[in-house]
Length: 161
Image (cartoon, rainbow, N blue to C red; front, side, top):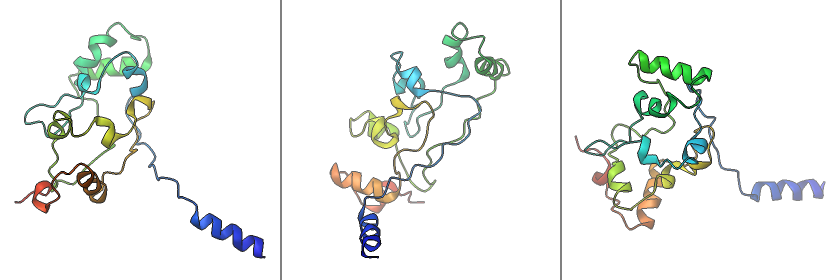
C-alpha cells in the first residue's frame, strides 16, 4: 500500500503533457512540412494585405501556379483544380482563432521583428497536418508581452467600441 501511495504522489507531481487539440478535418490534405522544404516561406502563401491585421489564406491561383504541373494527376490536386476552375475558395477549417473583441495585427508582430510565425503557431515547418500547437489565450499573450516588454494595458489589445 505505501508503494501505491508513493506512485500516486509521483504521478501527481509529474509535469502534465501539453494539451494539443485534434486537428480539424480539412477539405484537402496539405503538408506545411513538404511545402516549406521546397524553400517557400510563410509570407509566400500567407500574405498580409493592408492594414496587416490578418495573414490570409492563398487563393487557388497561387496553388495552381505550381500544381498545374506538379502532382496534377493526384486526386487531391484535381479537387484543388476544381475549386480553382469554379473560382471557389478552399473551405479550410480554422485552426487558430482569436475573439472578435481582441485586436491583433500580424504585421505589427511579424514585420517589426517582435515575433516570428513560430512564436504563436509552433513549428509549422515540421507539420504534415496543421494543428493548434501553441496557446493563444489571454494569459499566454500577456506572458509574451511581459517577456518582450510590450504594453499590457487592456486597451492595447481589446477593442474599445
